[in-house]
Image 1 (cartoon, one colour):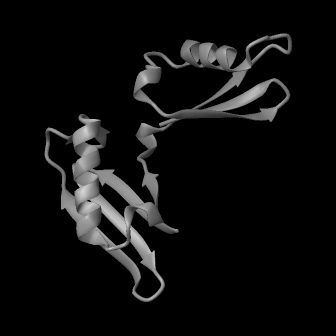
Image 2 (cartoon, rainbow, N blue to C red):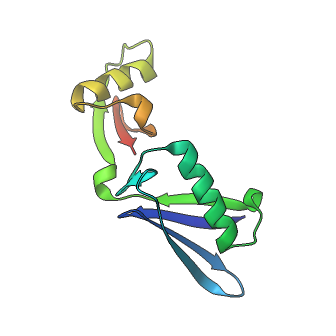
Image 3 (cartoon, one colour):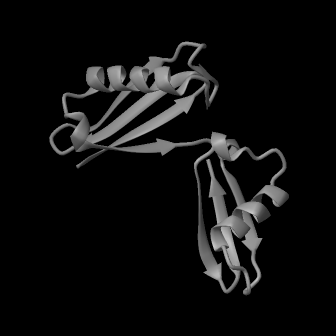
Length: 128
């Protein structure tokens, strides 16, 4: 499996891949303003097609042989700690409720998130 590194900065798509024979190879393309605004993807479906087309231009490796890794800007990452009671019945629901309370304006439909237990009753919440 090849790891394709994807970065979006200032409406520029940057793709990088380490090839055994060629070493590090890179590709850059300007993203239309109706798809992305700086680092924010405005139209997910259209951006997905744009990424697929540019990946095909960049490498001949089949899509099913590529693993995507997205590099995000620090301002696009939310990190927070959430503490929960030991008597809570639905752990995930409690963590999400606490995250909503701590992070103003957080819309769960607009993010990818995960959490991990780091101490008894303490979880690290990470969202992109």
